[in-house]
Image (cartoon, rainbow, N blue to C red; front, side):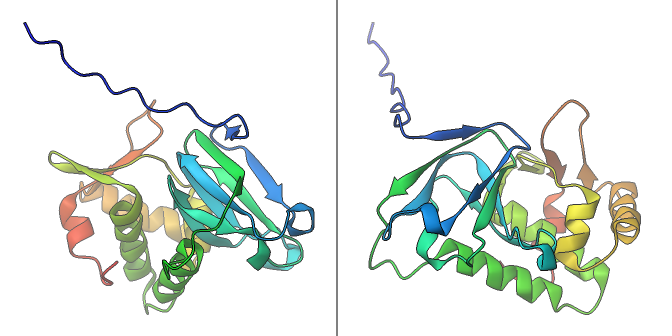
Length: 200
């Protein structure tokens, strides 16, 4: 009998910050050493602006391996919210030469969505973007490991919470989305993702 090889994931660094779902922290650039960045070790985070004028505007979503440069933040910093159980370190050295900044890329994609003409198109494009970047295909559904409130979705697509609720109800009635009770995430039909107005 041959013993199976078991791979044990490396332990998180002692400097890792751990947040539970819904917790958020403010990253003050004035308190961060120059040349460092936040790196997500595990989970999914929402990065948003704490400025009163922007009312918590979402800038990006980050997942394991993504970095956030702390020297490129506005003077008030940014907030990082855990959408799933989250672990990150704040003392990572920025990777050089890759030419890819996940925060800038997310901000660009969210801006593209906001410029679609109809709210229904914007919602469709947002759901597809989230699944393509942060979800996975599981059998006859695409799983997204977290949920967003209707108010947050409204902020992302430029509509009110009431309009967002109405649009999501239509998608549910068409059996293109499921939100299982007792679970953190939701499921979307692949056809919803594949027929999105914008390519991710």
